[in-house]
Length: 439
Ligand SMILES: *Cc1c(COP(=O)(O)O)cnc(C)c1O
Image 1 (cartoon, rainbow, N blue to C red):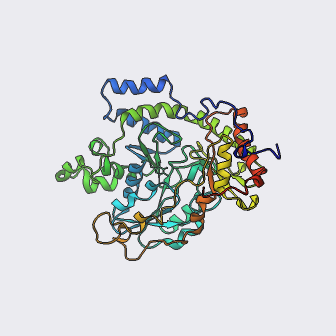
Image 2 (cartoon, rainbow, N blue to C red; image 1 turned 60 degrees about the vertical axis):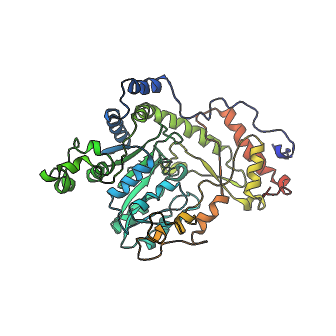
Image 3 (tube, helix red, strand yellow; image 1 turned 90 degrees about the vertical axis):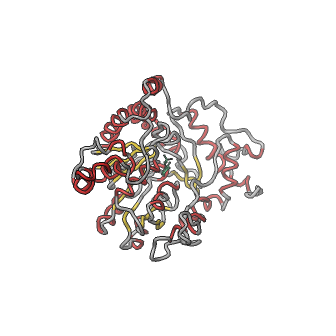
């Protein structure tokens, strides 16, 4: 296709075909509608009967013992943190390159966040940058399977076990993904998922926590599910301490966190149907996305964000899929110009993903609870804040990654046109020298 005029310079666009429903998500059929209407018509929105069925199916789907449906992924993450013992003055270690809900719920537990570096290839927590950040206050490490790529869990688990620290996987980007053959969310002590409508498993607002540890599951119920404490068959420590002691029975009806995290049953009803079809839909997404990348194998400047095929690891449903940009292979072409030119070819894209969190004023100076000092250090005995250039890989990534189309169907002729946008721009990058990235 070489020496073609780029669309940004007045040439023909690569994308000519109507994409149809190739990007439509979630896929909603009459079965979803009927399931939701059944709950709506009988007024069952605030019950738990559908949610508990969904929990059983979700746990089984993952091969986990327990699941807990929550009102959001944020709620699932905060419940998981508290269940894992995160409290006053404690620290969690997580990536700065993530959606805020991975880490910020620690603040309301009067704990704080220590950010660790991410790996430039996987974009996930770098196992080599964790151990030196562990202190006597560290309670949990929270890897994110970022944009679908499974975090390197083996060394993370090894470090966590050595230091007796819990691992909470944030699986909000990677439902059904595999790490060396194991489903993500089942490797750490807890997996926490968002299932809001933008995610790969998209059911409405909602979240889920899965675990094999009954104590963690019970604690999460105590925290935010007051309506279920009496009906839960308690075991172990919680029962002895708080639940069945005669004089404490009333506490069984109050949420310890003071939060109400019940999952909306219109979401649970939709979730049961979505889960039924998720594996086959995910597999079609994987076929489509892998094809998109295979077409660009030898294209300069652009690199797939996916594990090698022979590792047993996958990208799940390819949520928020990205490519990696290597400006050096394109004579230093600014990624912003590259993205503008690709967009002009008919494939809308832009640089970056989430902005790194560690430099945001909320993590530096904000006093949320009136401590008279920044919340980040309000309960700490040392200043955990990371300054400018402290996480160089994380800070460089907004100009090293870009969005790619999220195909839901394997339709080669459509996918080829989108892949050609990137190839054409990369192979004709010399036409872009005069474009101002700032404009
Ligand atoms: C979406 C998301 C969450 C939060 O989930 P909500 O359901 O929106 O509360 C947490 N972590 C990551 C990485 C996410 O992308």
